[in-house]
Length: 139
Image (cartoon, rainbow, N blue to C red; front, side, top):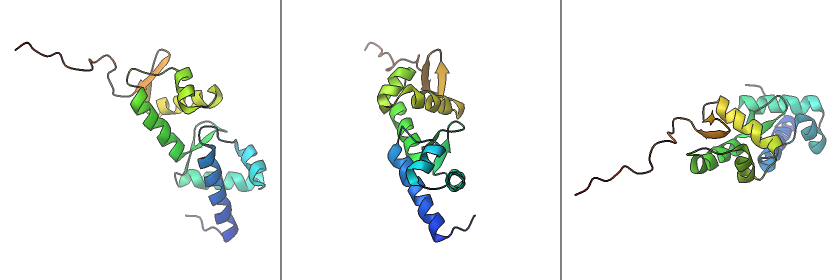
């Protein structure tokens, strides 16, 4: 594991806080550099380290989410996505634009948490066509 000096540790904490607080609308690395007032190379290095440590998750080349945000998305989908959710429904669930919702859904599909069924994304391994209750036999 990389040894960090006090300044790097402080920047890593700030990156962690920024991505945690940004939730479902995370900044790009370039935006994070501007927001935190740190050189792009330092931000990239801290984001790489944060990914190695599992603190942030890369969804696209320039879109990273905090692990807590990804878990929150999973928790919301576990409640709402039995029969599947559309990208627009997911967008509303997380109060973010399609710019963030669609790549996050595609990431969850790619990692096997959800599966795409037509335009809907449903929990993987969950049979949406299964009855909610087993039919009761007559006494």
